[in-house]
Length: 140
Image 1 (cartoon, helix red, strand yellow):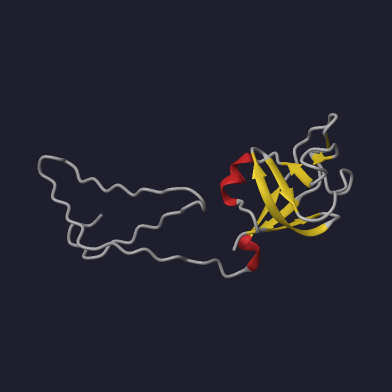
Image 2: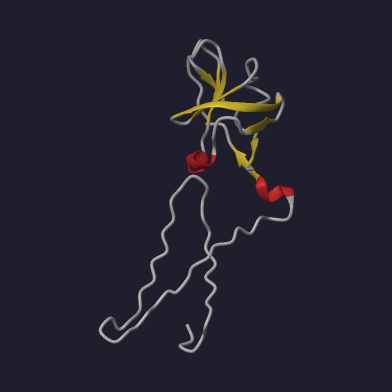
């Protein structure tokens, strides 16, 4: 960075639900002088609504409890739920968040347990809502 600059702008990307740390170091350490007089952060919200949407994929699992990643057995008292394949999105999910299934439409997340996402209302359809269909969540 230029030595005579009075302001530096450092763009960072922060993932919701995680902790980010910005560490500034000046080199060579024995001769460097770095003074941070102030630090400010600004949220740059995306302009279009699609930037708030994330696509989830139900897990491709079928057994006695799951079909195409959709709960079909009496897991948790017959609640509607799915197992998700893309685990990296888990930190961005939270109870109360809107979620939209391919066939069953909009629901709200009521609980997240491991890779399982439990939602409001009645059961989901494993054929029309499960793998390989996509589910959309809206980050707000």
